[in-house]
Image (cartoon, rainbow, N blue to C red; front, side, top):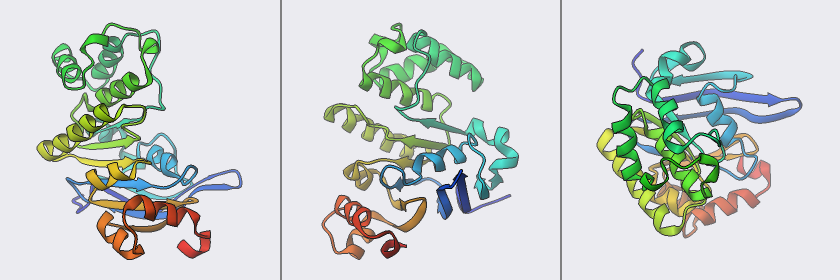
Length: 248
């Protein structure tokens, strides 16, 4: 089914016991852009991403990816997607090369050694390819997670804190890398981040979550103007500190 959006979420809800981690949210992501899913800890970002990946089943609502029902067509869609988070560990005893090889074969890549060499060069991982993943620094693990997410050159890339634990220079390089990847591949990126300067740089659209609900959305510049503030970080803080009902 043709669609004007890569991601379409309608009435999406996930309840754990008495907690509505995601509470009837609606949003859409246009093709070929980088959008942000923002909110404080416990806002529902990670749960939403897990449902977009098919790792969690929604309590109710719908998810369409590339015009297809994610709940029914998950295995038809997953090869076109990938995901990165520094908070999701890879097997510690395997080397970086072995970890990337495993995922490369899962995506049925043809020239696995070449693809690993390419990403290792681009993300400065060549020196640690044969080191056990568990022996890496937090920043190195973050770059390995990003390399894993790019193995299959995904059309849809879901990123959870992609520059966490990186020093400022490396984080700036990674942001530039992602900008170039999105521009040259035409991929769509959905980014969850607490770094508002990063979001302002990378993202054309923002969805703000609070306590599992969408409380605002729009382009970063439009949100800054709407709240009469100087930058997106001030907007984030303003929304976070307002009474819940005032932002709904």
